[in-house]
Length: 488
Length: 91
Image (cartoon, rainbow over all chains, first blue to last red; front, side, top):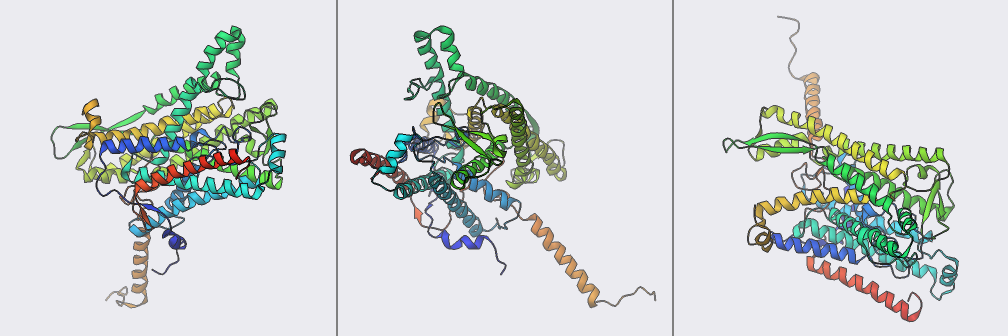
């Protein structure tokens, strides 16, 4: 066919992209676990400060968005998995809606599409790093350090180029690590592994962390600090200050997170069990669950991907070109000098900013933010199951290949029946997820902890499904792991 | 002989054939998979967003090289920090 296709533009670049080989033989279960743990450790290790940037001295306007993307301000993980997520969501949705036509039956098309997502992830990081560097985001915020950095012998241009190079390279490495995990060396979608690991470390750190913050002289962990306060301060002030400290995680955030976690783990159990049986084995009826959260954590991740991208672009452009008060307005936290608050403008209304100017706009923000996350998550849930090849038709096909029939339905009606369940559960589940997290985050009390920990948990559950099915199918074959934990 | 007897062939039949083949092409286009998993090749599922499942073109590298590269990059940044501390500036 001589028709012009958008995919062909990228063909020439495919050759220069590093591509990890598929494993020659199937990687054994133990090795996969070692790879997964090792790579997540490597990921966490790379959260070290960018050379030329002092993370303690920059003001971070995105701190309430960071946790679901495993990113850390001023470090090599400045963007975390955001570029990878953005490009994956963008291209898969664009191709899923058939705006860009890709023949997925064709191997060369599929692999070009895959390289395209990889290239655009790195490209996104390059663009964001550039605009943020130009906007002066990486410059120290306090006056003296700023003057010092201006007077130093190195020019700003060179240090900016160095910062951009480091961030682009680190994103390329993150992308390669994701690829490594997904190509069968490790477990599951690499993005989700990183989100899970980062959420887990952040949450345990915010409860039991011993590290002392050099600014506020308080421990990372709120419980550790509680004991320190009990011995050093009067009882009431000691406890009260832990509920509204701003430098580290406070008790309000932790309790809000736990409430959201409880609600969502409760809803996570909602499912419809379809009775299935094999056509080959007699009298073996088992169940196939269709969960209410059919799309897992993806709907809320999608909402937050939109918000995070909007925030980065708007912040950088506002700092470079001045911007407009109608779109967004950032004000630096004059007390701590380490965050910018969104104070007004359109972006304020879809933010988890804790800034409070008057009652009406605050209530408006709560409603607008909740509506935004609910709506975007719901839309995502409405269309994603069809874009990801998880419709009733696909499931019915899968059943048929494995000689499974649904009890009480003829072959012809199975797809339709499954679709009825899947479409409604996907839409309703995504909407509920967006609404609960949106409501928790809209108040500005949780500052991203609730959404981070819950996405981490939901990602972990999806991953665990992967790990367990692998373990039950082939894990027990000469595995040290199976010897310790037993087989089933 | 009834009046409705039409002569076979001609423009009408051609139009019908074209309509039928167009319709078929349209149906075919509609039934094309819109994702790798829909084509039965792995890829993103409902609850998991993945990118990589085929071996694409490009220069092939061993997984170990990626790990070594990542560690080397981390150490080079650490080295930059050390150099900055020593010389008192970024370089």
